Image (tube, rainbow, N blue to C red; front, side):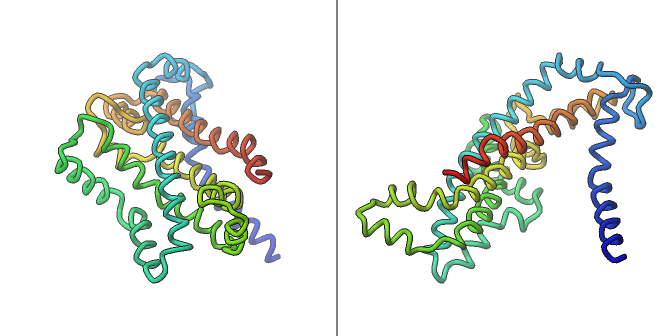
Length: 260
């Protein structure tokens, strides 16, 4: 009886989490002219409209580019920070951990406003995408740090000492000994970083450069003056991209990571 109740509870939770996705995808297939659910007939006309909308396609390209660069930078910095935290931080561990996780502890809007003041103070403003990239790296960094730190908790420093005794330099010890063992954590952290960067709204809204928009911002601007199922089609494609990145990365790279 208790197992059945637990299964029912889990089913309700999953249904609650999946309901918005089902509604969005269902609305994107609406044959009518307005964004409604349940759909008034089924049609792919709004997906065709979306694929011919250069503004949305440009926004997707911008989002993918920013997410890729932010993931690369956050992955590099987060991995180095995690290694330092576990092996060399000593009594400064708690202060370093709080500092690196502070973007998650503070409301995102406060982080965005603070970064906006910062980029204007240093003279960057919104003329370039540098400020937007800084914001995305900052919001993604904690996810890389937490995943790599978890992998490093099971790492035995004696393995590094053994490699050092055999004449391996620092870079060789990291590349041949430490990295293969913590690679699943690095991969998971970067995957989280990419998904978060691709979908983040507040940071992008505050720091976007003039003349460019990420997909969430472009969708927000579109909904202010239009209420067609094309918006649901765009949102559905965003869901598909996120799921595809996770599935393809796991299928293509997952086994390689564990065999490396």
